[in-house]
Length: 398
Ligand SMILES: *Cc1c(COP(=O)(O)O)cnc(C)c1O
Image 1: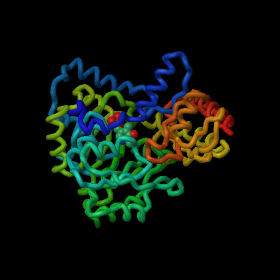
Image 2: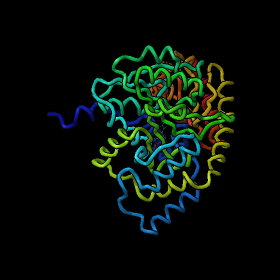
Image 3: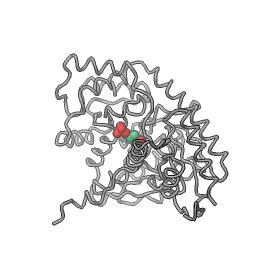
Image 4: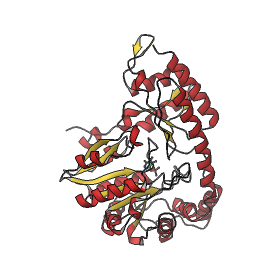
C-alpha cells in the first residue's frame, strides 16, 4: 500500500507560491532578484484595521466564534453587498472562511460530485482546476482570447456546456489577465446559465481594484433569478492588503452556505476571531486607503503596459483590474541563448530568473503558454529595473 493517497499524489504545489519561494532563496544567497511573482499587494495593512485587531485581543475576543463567522462580520459583509453591489443577503446566506481560497475550496466540496463538469475559462487562477478536481469533479477548460479582453465568447461557453455541467467559474477582474466583464456580457452569460440550469461561481476578490473608472458589476446583482444560481466568493486580502489575515467570505443560496458551514465545522471551525474583527473594520470602516492603493496600481499599470508593448515581439493587454499584466512572449519561443533553445513559458521564465534575475510566473500554469504573468504589486523603482532587465535579456536571444 502506498503511503500517500491518490488525491495527494495527484496534487502539485501552487506554482505561484513556488516561484516566490525560489526567488526568495536566491535573495537569501545575496542575489538581487526583482520579483514580479507576488500575488499580494506590497502595501501595509491600513492602520485602522490593525488597531481593530489589537483592540480585539485586548478585549479578549480570542475564543471560538460561530463556525461561519461572528454575526458582526456577517452583518458587515451584508452591508458591503448592499452598499457596493445593491444585492440583499440574509445572515444564513453568508459564511466567512480562512481566506477566499478556503471559501472556494469549501464551496467545491459542498456542490461538486464525481462526474460533474465545471467550466473554467482560461487563463485561469491556478487553484481552480485542482480544487475542482479535489472535489472529484472535472474542470472543463474554455479558452478566452486577448482580442476579446480575455473574456468568454458566448459560442465558446455554449459549446462547452453538456448535461453534466454543474457550474461556470467567473473571475472578474481576472487573475492573471486583468480582464473584466461588462454588464452586457454578464447579462448574456446569465441568460445561458439560467437556460442550462448551471451555477455561476463569481470570484470577485479584485472588485475594488479597477482602473479608468471601470464600473464593476456582480452577476448576482442583475436579477433575482440569476442571484439564486450565483455563489459569490470574495475576501479582504486584496482590497485591504490583508493576505496574511486569512478572511474570505461566500454569499449564495442558503442550502449551499449551510452545507459549507457543515464542512467547515468538521475541518477548520471558525476563521481567526481577531482577523474577523479586523475584517469588520476593513469592510465597514473608512475606505480611503483603498483608493490610494488603486491610484498607485493604476500608475504602475500604465507604465508597465507601455514599456512591455514597446519591446519588440511583445504584446500586452491593458488590464481593466487586479494587479497583474499578462504579456505575450511567444514570438521568442524557438529562439536561443548560448545554444539553449526556449520553446515555452516555463523555459523563458527560467531564463528570466537565472540570467536576468527577474521572477515571473509562466503562463502555462494559468493554462496559457504564450504568456508570462507579472505582478505590479511592487515598487515603481523595482518595476523599472525589472523591465530593463527583461528588455536586455530579450535582446540576447537569437
Ligand atoms: C488571491 C486570490 C483569491 C483568494 O485569496 P485569499 O488570500 O485566499 O483570500 C481568490 N481568487 C483569486 C483569483 C485570487 O487571486
